[in-house]
Image 1 (cartoon, rainbow, N blue to C red):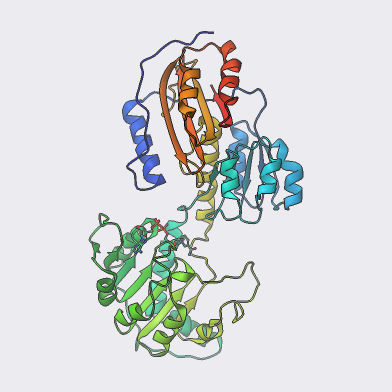
Image 2 (cartoon, rainbow, N blue to C red; image 1 turned 120 degrees about the vertical axis):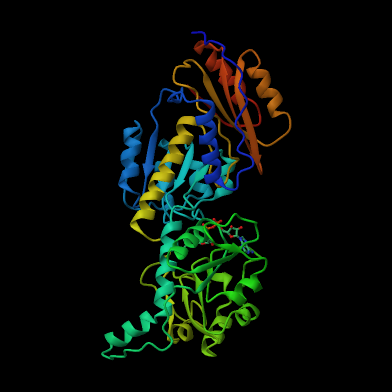
Length: 459
Ligand SMILES: NC(=O)c1ccc[n+]([C@@H]2O[C@H](COP(=O)([O-])OP(=O)(O)OC[C@H]3O[C@@H](n4cnc5c(N)ncnc54)[C@H](O)[C@@H]3O)[C@@H](O)[C@H]2O)c1
């Protein structure tokens, strides 16, 4: 069958966007501006149906969505050991896990057909990301699906701290009636200082203003404030003006202990500190001193430098040497890293990661992959039958594009985009004017280059 030549269009570059969500939005907006036609559903040209192994408590909606797309899904609610995985993984093209299943280099070696890994959670430490990338396997997760949940928890903590809610409740549970208003405040009209105005910080800004708080924020990047929030120039300026300081920065070398003795002294007397970001962002012994001296009126802490590995494990001085002192302080809310732990966030994680896996398997898009160059191409319109999408993962070394483009040169390359990350590079190209009987030879030519890792054709 011969495929008709159509007009050559420019490739879609994801450059210039702040993060993957912005890039998805921009890519979708470009799609809708330039091409309002229905996208064609692509399928791998290999005859074999795609098999997915889905482990742990992954949302059943995600499992149903995979089955609805025609994938063969094996689903177990339990994690698998390394040995079990080594034995089973060889027959699957995709795997979905949460945090208990470890995908080690040994597992990846046995995963001869594996194309993609979906971590249905925030972190990806359970996967050997470098070994996966070297094997041509992108890894997807869902880092921002719980932003709203964290922002809502902060709202609860603001009120709970300023009304000494946990102390009153604890007293009454022990049989003590202690009705008082001294040192208890409304949050209306107070100043909230947000450190880090990203996904969580900016959501929180909107919620806080609805409660009548004045919002200031400090961020290393200049960001357009939402509502009436105002960005301040320095952390010191934010600390000096805020009644509540809440932290929403990532853990980076420069954010470790970014709130220590000096910064705590810069906070207003009677202010409150909230940390739902990362445990090492706050110097906790310094915070304990600030609370003991009554310079701060309270704190809420959801994240700790060392956290127990499982529910039920003790939170004690063996884990963090100051744990018992912190636990005994009044008006300190301690929670076990639950900022993002809601049913809604779990559902959203399921939807987002399932979508990323489907977009990769069906369209080759690696947008949002944590270990891989992020590459995407605009959808092929439904009525444009016969185009082939080439997805070529290869070693990042000189001369590859020359070889691939020589192989593609007899055909019309409708669009093409390539990017690299570390040792791995990824090229996507839509080609027309190729007959199906030529495809095996073309595929063989591209995949037999010495830089080839994985080559797939979608049509
Ligand atoms: N407690 C929980 O369960 C939970 C859940 C989700 C996220 N988190 C944590 O919350 C934090 C924020 O998450 P997010 O999704 O909003 O991240 P994000 O990447 O969207 O935003 C982080 C913001 O911090 C800013 N920033 C980076 N370094 C900074 C510095 N030195 N000073 C000031 N600003 C700086 C960035 O420019 C960015 O705007 C992360 O540490 C994340 O791990 C915790």
